[in-house]
Length: 307
Image (tube, rainbow, N blue to C red; front, side, top):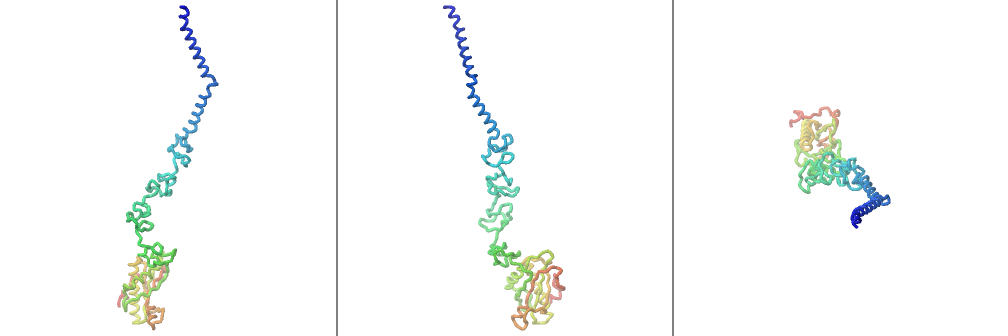
């Protein structure tokens, strides 16, 4: 009995060892490794497929500056969404994808319009216009343009030109010559107040001057009075017309020449009141400098200033 008690610990140790070896053998049995193999294979796939390019944009994570782009969003070589105009707003969100380089834009990718007139601040030459103000293409207040020719009504000498017509800087369909029969008081060269709108309109139809061109103003009278008096009168009226168009239409003084013909070149019958009125006229014409007639000058001769 004593011997059995002495052997019992050894027998138990041997039994536990045998059980442990059996369990180990079962764990290492190739037939029992399918679970481990499956987990290992799945992890490997995750590492090689997803962690390598987490947002699946085609740019490896180690090179991706924007590792969380939306699925399917086009990206650049750095893995960031495209920003074609380089304004800091992705094309997907950019409501103004053609912003000029360097301009400040809002969260929608559009330039600011501080005064809300519809003209971007970078192009607005008149910032701070009041709300609901009608402005032109550079953000400045307009005063109406009823014929839509681009000339404000206040400056338009021909405010009813046909839609789409080519106009000059005064809003008129340009011509190279114009005749005006404004009325002067007897033996006077002053442009009467009631004749100013007529002269301004007539002179405003002249074409804008090109390089090498000038305006020639020629004064004419009827045949009443002496020939010498009519000649001086025609010069003075031409000179008054020059002063007027310089002041009212912005012509340069050194591009406006004058001359006077007096009664020498009538265009109507001087024996009738109607004919005489037609002969009392001012002609304005666009010519080149090499066409300038003899005697035409920039400054009226002193002798012609005499009444």
